Length: 272
Ligand code: NDP
Image (tube, rainbow, N blue to C red; front, side, top):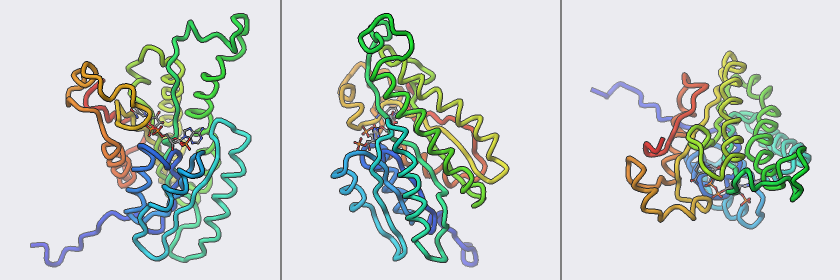
């Protein structure tokens, strides 16, 4: 029956991808899966040793494939330009006809959280300062929301010219569900939901998509304080904490899907 049919497996050979937070946890699994599909992966994080280890360990499945580490702190927006230019320069050096010379896939996975009740969160220990949140709050907003917006903006024209773009934000189910102690974190993730939705309407005509994946509790360093909490596990309909593969599978699904955009896909075992 299948004798004459061509089975075209989904592959990403020649595509260039950035994975922020690609050195660890969810982002690392995404980087592995993209590399396994043949993409060139830029692994963006802060810690040098961990970044180098991650880049070295990524699969190389064809001879033209390259993976490159980018060290840059997303909480410092004045450092972004240098790294963005470095990525663009590296791609221009790939110098291979079979390789796109632009970023086509952008996965924002880097993120941080600090649990703190808002009424206890005085601005820089000064209750009369109403001009900023506090250092932790500012760091969360800059890392989780502002920098992803700035990075996306800097690659948009390239994606439009390429007529191919897959932008994926790793949000969080708490952006819709809420969580005590996470007012600022959930604001940052909720901001991504709104940003991605509007962006999808601006870039669709260029064959570019933008989606959010909202994880529930996933087994990584970030969720360590919760992963053995029986009560929490019982509140999840699928009765388990998620794993990084649960998220990376959904990333690949969204990259392969040509007709899904502006969505927020919850991958949370039914938690919300
Ligand atoms: P991890 O702590 O395991 O990994 C975080 C990654 O982000 C690391 O690679 C880290 O690199 C990078 N990173 C953090 N801050 C910065 C920064 N300022 N600049 C550059 N890189 C940075 O987290 P997870 O994999 O668990 O989380 C990934 C995403 O998923 C986050 O956005 C998180 O909010 C979201 N999420 C996670 C959930 C979970 O249960 N784990 C639940 C819901 C959402 P380095 O170590 O070098 O700083």
